[in-house]
Length: 141
Image (cartoon, rainbow, N blue to C red):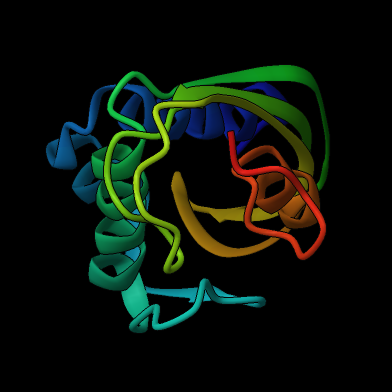
């Protein structure tokens, strides 16, 4: 596949993140998908990835994931992203706060034959927890 086709797979996957439409994940994520740094409690494969995304969407129902920059080389697609959302349901043990958060990060994905097969995400979780008031010494209001 071309670099542009590989980038299109990731663009389509972001559509799943933003809508929660699991049929999109079924289309673009390999059944035996590998997450290099799994989310706490994430189960393996495509189903584990879908469950994590849907859990995040439940906690932040207005979640909007924006790709700020994307580059590709061979099977690898690297993206710098920003996501925003309002914390409406308990997440990572933090009760709903009603706070709007902005989180940045990078993700390196591998695409083979039109499917996402592997991913490693580096997200600013410390910033997320600080924004939610979950860090010691941080105000919760």
